[in-house]
Length: 362
Image 1 (cartoon, rainbow, N blue to C red):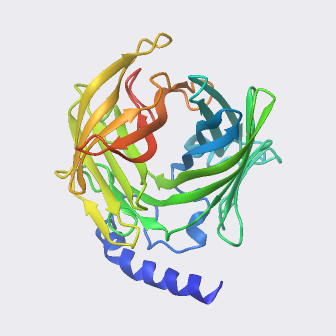
Image 2: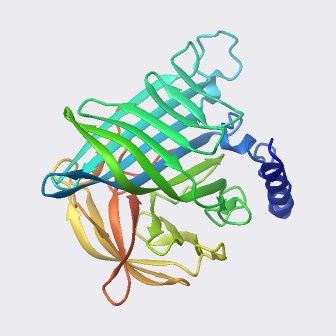
């Protein structure tokens, strides 16, 4: 491990120690401070885990720039019913993957998904660093910190590289993020905002070289991330144009009331403010009803945080993803703008909304 990485690991370990001790005795797997590069990798002792990259990119074409939004997500899920089975064919871990491309010029969303049991050379998630493979879909972290995503889907393909421009952002209490009033309703959670995007996008046989773009990576793992009363969540990860990063989320009950909320704001220079559950308020402004699922989603919000009051506005209403062929749910996830109180766009990122078509089950 390089000296700089070793020093950072020691600092993060010291910061996270009090939070880990506070959750001891909850019946969860062993709690410990985050350590990198180990925690870039998989955590198979925990029930649910995901690596999630979203972003926006532009490619040059005749007449101007072509703008895209994209999402690449790999999930790992522990299968408790198979834990005592000795067979190599036992499905002790499942790996899922989603990929989506929003073509803003064409006003359309393309989506694909994969699922397989880990092992047998089909699906794999390394425990030492980010290296996830599901058939020909991959997400790998390189020695220099870059991430490489390679996805060949039915109507599009992504060959994208993501270079860090800032340090890892530990969400919550030094990487332990509360998601409810119960001590066990928590997750390990870190982000890498303001990733620089390079690479290529193929859209139905047409190749686009990415000239510029920004992305956001979340890595989260948990045993019990939602309370029994929660049906879903609303979440944003926004890269601001000034180099800062804004996270906000809330978990909802079936009546749409917030059960828990949180998030963070970090400046370009590294100043961090972590939000408490009373600091964040989502208020719907405009709704859209999916012609496919008949679910109704707020595609424009006002968002109040200690970092300011904003509007979150989808750049395309129809960014609903039907993932019943893998994770078993329908949800909305799409590229959106962040607008300040003066009506000026100050950032761009992703809005995710789950539990509107039916209660989310993890």
